[in-house]
Length: 146
Image (cartoon, rainbow, N blue to C red):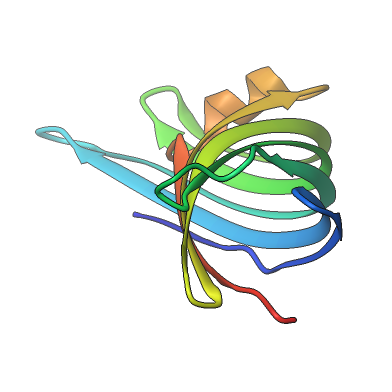
């Protein structure tokens, strides 16, 4: 089971250009049961960061594609139980996220589908060893205040 909530506050500073601040909380849990042992991983993370998004010009269908890049500070706390035993980890890391997606506007709401690639600058191996799931993409619903 994975869960993530991510409030974002942004400002359109010119047509198709958005700069934003974001914060997020996520948690994950996976469990596998063999004949005599229960294996599990669980994690919790907090991030704070900023990003720039550029919207490509709208097409005749009123949808638009976007590209996004930013910088996030991550606090990660996790534990796992495997054949080799039980272990915990806690660390900070910097992440450079890249995202491409499509936006579908509906009145003042936006529906977005996107794919994400995160580049972890310092603790990539530790993160992969303890992480309990993968977020490959996003489905977002947002509201634009004008």
